[in-house]
Length: 111
Image (cartoon, rainbow, N blue to C red):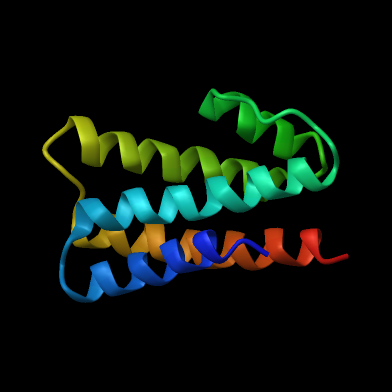
């Protein structure tokens, strides 16, 4: 299990507590991206560079909810990076989604 992905998830939770909402979006997304990449590596597959292709690769493993969550987290990260930022509610959603998705992907990886 990637310690980096777990650390990013922990950082997202801490960033939420200190109201660094844009950092929450980024850490939440990259925590999930890293564990998704780890799954593909474990299966001997190539890691897509594009975010949408990575979500599709995860979806093709039957992880449909997780792929949708990845797309949602990516959209929040883009909003945080390229727009005015994300709200507290959006940051809370990002953390909630990333925790649920992380647990699900971790379970898939460990089976």
